[in-house]
Every structure is written in C-alpha cells, then in structure tokens.
Image (tube, rainbow, N blue to C red; front, side, top):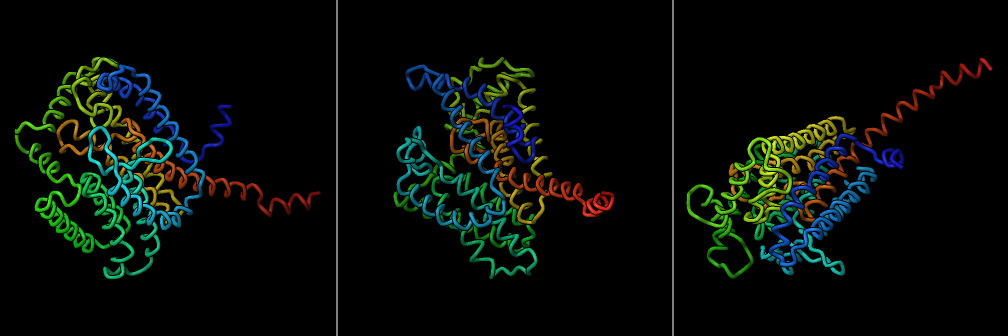
Length: 402
C-alpha cells in the first residue's frame, strides 16, 4: 500500500515532504487556537474545528495530487480559458459577496449546494501568474514594445487588480508585486515596469480620493487601510494595535522553547488566532525554536522551488514554477512579519498552516503545478535512460552474435 502511494506520486519528493510536514504540524496550533473559537461560538466543541481543518487539508492534497498528474503544458491553454471565468467570479463576488465573521462583505462568494465560502481573489492570483508566464514564454524571442504589451498583458492585470482592490488592498498589493517580480525575471523591460508602477500608483490614489469623496458609492475598506497604516507608524490605540500587542505578548511569552503545545494564553485574547496571527501562537507554544524551524521549512521550500525552476525543460516551465511558487513564500514572510510588527496588519494567512479552506486549496493548487513541472523533468530523465538501455548498436551486436 505504502509503496503503491509512493510510486503514484511524481515530481520533487522533497516538496511533497515539506508540504506534508507543514500540513501535519498545522493541526497542533489550529486545534489549540480553536478553543477560543469554540468558546465564542458557544458550544465549546473544538473537535469540529479539527475535523473541518482535516477536510480542508484532505481536499487540498487531493487537488495537489490531481493537478500534478496534468502535463504542465496544458496550463498554458487553461490560463486563457480561466481568465474570463476569473473576471466573472470577481464581479459576482463584489455583487453577491458574503460576510465571514463580520469581515468585509465582498471577499467571499458562497458555493451553492455545499454551504461553503470561497475567496475568489486567491484563485485569480494563481490564474494570473500562469497567464503571465504564458505571455512571457510566448514573446521570449521577440523584441518587446510597450504598445504591443498593453492589451494582452497589462489590461488583464489591471482588470483583476481593480476588481480585488475595493475589498482587499493587501492582496492587490501582493499580486502587483509578484506580477512585477515575475515580469522582471521573465526579461520584461524595467522601464516599462516602472512606467506601469507609476500608472498603478496614480490609479490607487484616484480610487482612494473617489472612495473618500463618495463613501456610499461602492463597498470599500479605504478607512481600514488608512487606520492600519496610521497605527503602524504612531501610538494611537486601535483594533490593529490591540492585535499586534497581543501577538507580541504571545511571542515574548514563548521564550526559547515555548510554553508547550496547547498551553497558549493569548489565543483567548488574540483575534484571528487560528489564521492571520497563528504564527504568534506557534512561537508562544513552541518558542523561538519552533518559530525558526517553521521559517526553515519555508526557506527549504523556496530552495526546492528554485531548483525545480532551474531544471525545467522550457522557459514556460521555469516561469510557471516561479510565478506560482514565489507568492507562497512571500505570503508566509508577510504573515510572520505582521506578527512581529515589521509590517502593517494585512490579513494574509500562513500557507498550509492557517485555518481556512480557500488559502489551503489555492496553495495546494500552486504546489501541484510546481510538481507537474518537476514530474515532466523526471519523465525526460527516465526516457533518456530507457533510450540508453535500448541502444540500437547493442541490439545489432546481440543479433550478430545470435
């Protein structure tokens, strides 16, 4: 049974192992933090949160397994098909978004029949990175002009950013930074990137001015963004300050080895302790050692992503791996930086650790794509070995001897 499973999984085995380690470890802090959620919910049952997280991870790894079996060249065409679908989903999310624990009403959309919510911006981010990788690989041998790249490249990027921005500035900013990084790695001229960065800054400024002038015109969180940035740079008491203070208390309480699994005190006071601020709970319970070990795992994953990209057999494969892989590490670093007040509160989860189905599923989707590229490399190596084993000269020699 075990050998059958191992034989059926392809791609970089270390990426599989790191993903599994992160997922297995996630049960400890999520279950610990769930006690607070169960108390707030009123029934005090934490086992339900454990099962929910288990099901999210099971579905996530099922997505990872299924996606890694798809030859990665198919993602080139799938990105073209998915882009208009993503546009529609983002528009529907703005129009029909649902509220999750009092959060902004236009981040999630309810999935019919299964009573589950889905954050469409995370899917949009993955699809957009695949689309950009496709575009860059398509023009790799051509002279890039700004005018020719506006319609096929920048229009889809800015449409997606504009649809996400009203409800989720941090995700919009991360997507823009990651798309710019991928374009830079893909050889897109820096002067064009700087020009579009300026356009994006002007667009953001205009949006803020319009949102402040007409606050009832559309759902937006401009006041929340401003208060988070203000609270990061001054000493005013706000909700974000409360979260950061509790997170720092949790981290300070952890010391070197932590207070022990499930023994966190601040989980009872820290909002979003099982998602946005789960890193603070991890450091409190497992200390500096646990926090650093988690960082090492993410850095190890980054190293393997770079290795897979370097060994990919096509330019599209290289850019695809970097496009969907780097945001995972970037998001993890931002989540950790927020917990230690190196960054304003963003609401970004810790990949494969935080509770929440959408984050887990989209991370597993991205890792599945990376494994698909790695699996293709393994096929090429195996094919070369098989061809060496069946060398025509060897066959001729054996025939003459007979």
